[in-house]
Image (cartoon, rainbow, N blue to C red):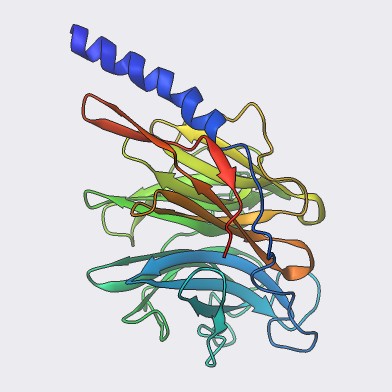
Length: 321
């Protein structure tokens, strides 16, 4: 092994604890929640955050909503936009994606988790339930408002009996690097929520890792900073969930932060963006009463070594309007 390789490996190892410890100090936006609890009787009286992306100065939020009830059925997908990530306008066409026809794979519920934007437009990976199993589907949109489901859905099935994802496969995050896709998904088998991982060359045909990459966690958001992957995810039941943080060199083997949780109880379903122009991380997350809240992190330094780069987010602060 060359000296350069050894030094690069040492730098990578040293960067892991710096990256992990940095993302632990949080102060909420003082005007929280940025989206108030919904009104009883509305189509989305029960609302759960799904994904947030920013395209050409406009934030697009996708969420899961239903009028009411217990269990996991009858959710559909809603959409809201914002110019600043704080003040949101609901799409008058909501819900923008609706349940499939009776007997179809997504007739029971829809659940959005992963949305990206590239030269082809908006692309979404979502979960669909037929009343028994939840599988992964795919949809596209030219503008983020009007969506078309992929006719070859579902694109990823549940695992075999006895596997950790034998009941539920719900996409959380999709990252594309050099034409190669990675997905982290919310998985369930035997009533236990875990996080799975899959890879693809086209975003349609997926090969799953046979084991969960996070053994106790759900609703994850993953960012890649050029050297390491960072994951925010929820641990605990819906009523008592808290947001944890972990880092990984490959997106598969994860090291949880020693000071977890990084956001306390009554928080889940994080959606995180990095604004490279202002060096700020933005996180929207689920709060009490079906509200949606915001926190930000000012990235005060960037660590460079031998062509690699990793964010050093040493302090979190409130977003002041």
